[in-house]
Length: 339
Image 1: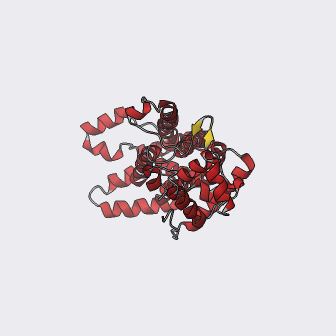
Image 2: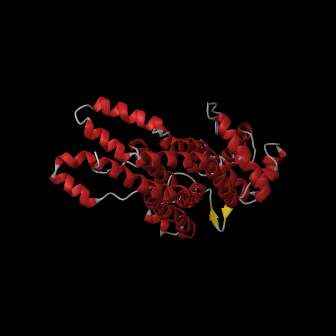
Image 3: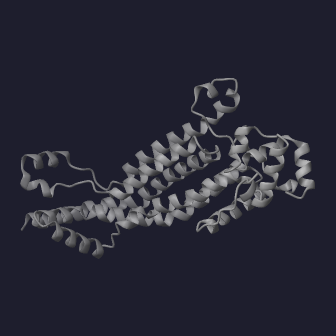
């Protein structure tokens, strides 16, 4: 039976690198949940410089909003000239529109190996070769040690194999004798009573049925993930906005179109970045109910790190920049009114 075929691709070096890191973390911590937590923290630490640079660029763009509005006022019927002058303005002030999306792109890039590793912990963390995993899969299938559903699942995941070996000493002894794996290559997916190899279910029949002791605790991670993500998004919006839009000024602009181009607008989040964030949320929800619960640990820690990062950037970059921009705007408005 062909199980977990070798798939070579451009992402393999990243898969192997992440697997090597997780394997060494597991050898040190000997706890799958803690390994995921430490690994997720490390990934977020790597992304901090990119996130800070992105936020600084966005802050600069917000700080230039009055100048952008002035360009629109001077050239209301010439979009090409507006675009050219805005590009020059951004270049002079070190603003990179593409840089704002880089952290989101990197997070998406990192998700791919995380998906693969959480589905194949016996290979990437236990260090068992794909060839030997295929042989083990064939052995337990031929001996009717897995259900038909689990046998199909083995085409993309080695978790059913890991489960059989942990619960069947005879099968474990046989595959060890055959040289397919070593005993110390087995890993435990248990984390405070939650099997991180199981996939959470949204179906009431499973959550409240006879298997509720298994499936009900699995809902803890999706719930925590959603709560943490909502807090992170709200905090990020609040801490990344340099100035509050003057509602009175907007109302005056509606009554006097000549002032419309001068009205401050909230352009703090480029459209592409908003799209990336929405896509990340969709991916998060989908993965929580289609992948092992290990993904829930990853998302929860990811969101907590995002909250901490938002507070850090606000205290050390956004707040000082906001104060400086308010002073600059006051002097700019005085110069404009004196023309």
